[in-house]
Image (cartoon, rainbow, N blue to C red):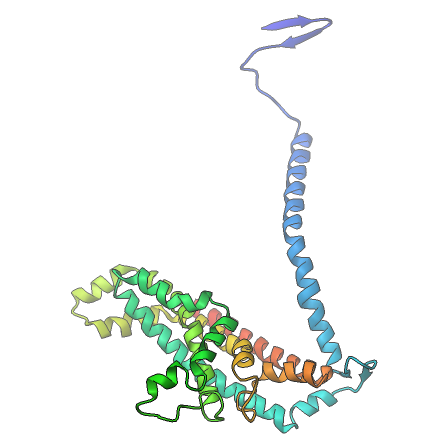
Length: 317
């Protein structure tokens, strides 16, 4: 079926197939892929620029300053490894390393155990699970500074905690002014603040375990503890490993709660590495030494991350 338009004849058949030359198809696909790549680059580019400006460049600059003597008032001077030698020979920095290690171990172990116990309890209570999830997760959505300020009012002399303990401790408890109690007090605040986050991760892992395993174990006569020990805990190992490593990394970087509650005191009992870096950089203007401590902390976290990757690879095998 055709129609005459001027001196051109146009075929108007509705069943006529449309054919394209192979070169045109290849050219069309190339254009489509190019547009896709351009959109991908457009979406990634802002994040990449932010990473380069606020992550990578400060890291490179900190690594450079760690080999210099720099106090923000005079031009930096290259001194080689003196700042790194200072880290491992200065008693105050070594004390910060010791306090940090104590804090990381004393905070991470009970934190993971409490999160695991809460996750197991909520897993066995599906009826009230959402209510308790919200209750335990509420401190997580709170900023660390606000949480620390709330606990600061509780730890205050003659505060709520002292009022509750007044029948047994009439004079009150020096929660934050005693070198013995200051670090456990900060650990208590940190555990209260972050337990809900790790509990949610472990609970999600438990909910992902097929119920057929538990039903088969119950048919075989396995009790509650046997199901937890032989089914839930072995299948929860990847989530447990993730929680342990992330909790360790976050503990090494803890700063806000220490700064609000104690600022490193009393008698340097809570002077962890992030507080040591902050005080040396902005109180003593020892930018070179602070940068060197930062690089040591960065290397420690890189080692932890590599351990995490190796363990996860082991889990996959």
